[in-house]
Image (cartoon, helix red, strand yellow):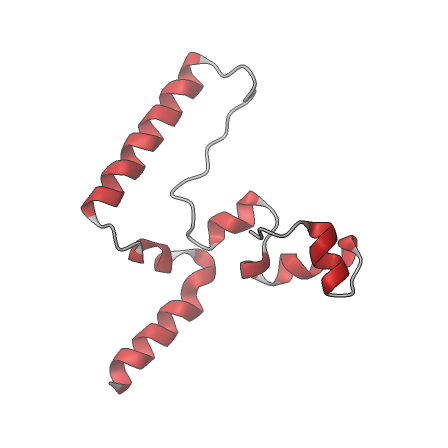
Length: 103
């Protein structure tokens, strides 16, 4: 996810917003949607809520359980190394493994 808006990023990279979105779909660290952001291991979970503006009691319970789990996980291991197991972090894990082996 970028702190910079799509229009600004497109202007700086001399691309159209459409071209930037297509590029972002191929480069995980440049994601603009939450599903791809999740593949980087930066979210503990993705929840599906049918109507976020008027969540059901079941939706609220699901969110509460997810938050409690995320807090418990963070308290158990505050290092955030769990993100390295994410789908688009394989290269990061491989680099760390090779660096440890060479040291």
